Length: 452
Image (tube, rainbow, N blue to C red; front, side, top):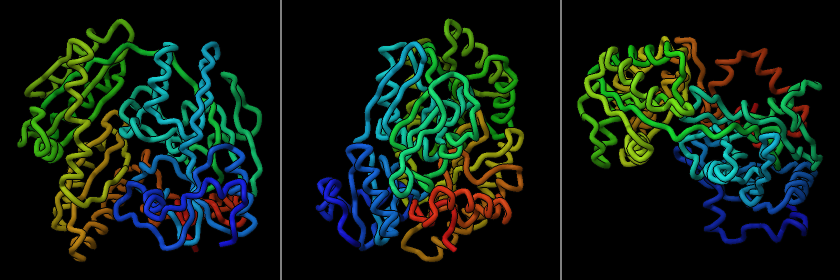
């Protein structure tokens, strides 16, 4: 690889061990290639210089934030440059317009904490909120626990500053509450997973801070009753701010890492919250009655924010519980709500048919679940079985009218299935759009769109 420009060589990671930590993300089996460079950008100008150089020399670039991706979208490529933008972490708040102008390296949770002084809130809340960055959230159109009420990242991005291959800086969108001038290029970049350019600034819509949430935890003996509970909550005129599902195997896995009071032989648990100003107590009591009528066998209702947080601790322990179980493939499928229970059943049928164990949890409020299939990485037959189960679960989502990804993105892991969802004509159109912005294919090649 020719030498990078002098202006960015100072930001190269020269320690090989440190560089390898930037070469991988949180996706299963991610590994560092033999030859790659890591540049930790400190400014927009650094990003411009890297993309100008990369375009001129046809060097692949992997834009990267906190490396929390589970789909391989931010793993280093052989002979490429990892362009990390974590240091671009400025925050500017306009209280009157209720917007924040932020760098891509701002950590989601840090932005939320920063906004409390203004009485404002940024609702998108991925489970990795304490570590994931706004740039990564934009790259995948991240959702999270509170999508049922507040929607996803795209609902809060008004405008972007993006550096394109070759170093051109473009701005999309607006800072105003309304604006329909031209095509929605902001929407095009949200969810593009680093395949078009590098976001260096985002204009985010904010909302007045809601009340501290209160929580209901409901235990069910079987899946049918739990689905009746989901349906009852969706029929309520005041939408919960959170509606999470943990199936029986998820509860058992969580109890293995700590005693959170979950039954190890139950059908599952629903966690529900309200943050409606001046009505949280009223809402959670009503939610509890709806869940009891649907068949909940045990209920816990928080009286204050501390109790509400305690009731959610088991849900937060799920990631650690999955890690403790060993190697796994995590899905991110979304189906119509009426098929949610059938999806959970199919996941376990598919895993069992391949001789594997699975758990199925996620966001019951919007039909986006995260089935997890466990396998033995040292056994080639087990690895093959997990891959086959992964594909079968995607097929099951399609069969139920759903999609292969709700919020994690396609990345490298799901790229082989994208054409099966979009079809040949749509794949060709999307590749043409990518080529318009990235004519030489240097931006995150092989991610989302398989190399041909």
